Amino acid sequence: GHERTADGAVDLALHLERPSKGRLMCRKVGAIHTGIFAKKSTHPTKWIGLDHSMDNWPEMELAKQIFKSEPELRINTLDGIKSAVEQTGWAGLGIDALYLEHQGWKAIHSYASCASEEEAKILSGLKSGYAREVWLVYHETRRHDAALRYVCDWIIQVFQQTQLKQNGAGLPGQEHCV
Image 1 (tube, rainbow, N blue to C red):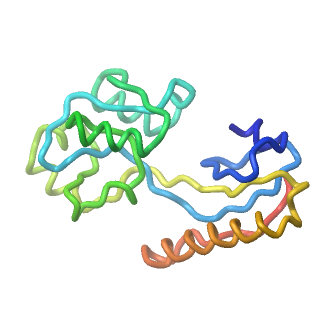
Image 2 (spheres, rainbow, N blue to C red; image 1 turned 90 degrees about the horizontal axis):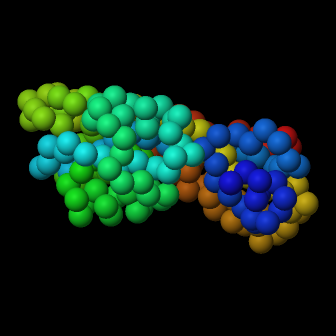
């Protein structure tokens, strides 16, 4: 969490919201699109979410409304959720970069997109529902660390290349202290 980055226990972290406390260097590196996903061949009635600390996220709220239930399973990593979605046939929270349409995935926008193939075809071209900023964060005492700078530059380059391929939006901002 933010606390481990703020006290220097973590060298570098990617956060989905800008930290507001601690002596941290923060730089917006881009954005990811999050949503609820499932295999195109399935019509899930259950879903996999993140842990309880993320219950107030809009993606979690949307899934609760769509499925009219709490998540059947909670997993702390997006990769873990994707693996569980593949094994169970349920829907799960994730980022669109992990659930590509040409690899057989669909975004779930409503309960109807789970139950009806016609609506799924109509909705399949839409992006998942939420854009989240991604912040690269490290303690200010590491500001002049050459190895850390190299890793930061690589992460920024990966986000720039990905975002330019998508649409050129969300390019990184300037580094600044909180």
